Length: 277
Ligand SMILES: C[S@@+](CC[C@H](N)C(=O)[O-])C[C@H]1O[C@@H](n2cnc3c(N)ncnc32)[C@H](O)[C@@H]1O
Image (cartoon, rainbow, N blue to C red; front, side, top):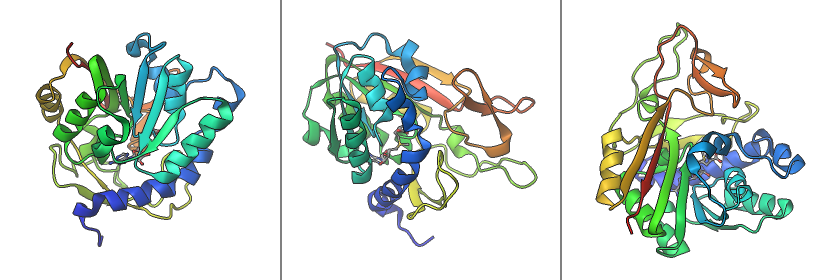
C-alpha cells in the first residue's frame, strides 16, 4: 500500500469520514428514535460499571456519530463529544438535535482536546470500542485525559483488547495467525474495503493506519499521567465480529466471542481510573 504511516491523521480522517454514511444506516438509529429511553448496546454493557452519572459533566472522546454520547446523556449526564472526523461530528449533531439532546459536538484530534474543550472541566472522560487503536502514543493520550478531568474525576474506557488486535482474519483453512504487533509501534497500514455494521458495500477511503498498545504500556501511561487505577477487567467478547466464522454471538447484548470449541481469548477490557483530589 502506498501510504506513509506518519500521515496517519489524514488517512484515518478520510477513512472515518467515508464510513459515516454506512454507519448512519448500520447503527440502527431508528432504535434511538423510536424509544427515548433506548441506550446503545455499548453503553448497556458499561452501565453496571459506570455508576451513577446523573448530573455529572462528561466528555466522550472519539464519539463518532454520537450514539453512545446520546446514551450517556439519557443516563442523566451533561455530555459533550469530540471527534476528528467532520462527517461524524455533523451526523452526531444532527442526531442529537433531532432527538432533543443539548450536546456540544466538537471537531478536533484527541491530542488537541484540552485546547478544544478546556482543562480540568469534566467529572468523567468516556471513550472506547475502537478508540485507542487510532492513537499513536498512549502516554500522550493519558496526559490529555488527565488534563481534561477535574480533581476526583474519572476515566472510563472499554476497548478492544491488545491480544485481539494481534490476530489475522481467519485463513481459508480457518487458521488464525499472529499478524500485528502487540506493543506500541509506528503504526500498521491496513485496507478494509467495507466497514463493520455496514451492508458490505465499499467505503470510499478504505486505507487506515492503526496502533496497538500493550496492557503494561496502557497501565504505565495511566500511572505516568498521575491517574490512580481503580479497576482493570478483561472480557471474552466485543460488540463487533472481529474474527469472522471463528466467532459466535452470545448473551443478551449479542456481542461476539470465540465459537464454542475454540479457545476463549480476551477480546476487550474495561479500565477505570481516577484523578486524585
Ligand atoms: C469506532 S469509532 C469509536 C466510537 C464509538 N465506539 C462508536 O462506534 O460510535 C472511532 C472514532 O474515532 C475517531 N478518531 C480516530 N482518530 C481520532 C483522533 N486522532 N482524534 C479524534 N478522533 C479520532 C474516528 O473519527 C471515529 O469516529
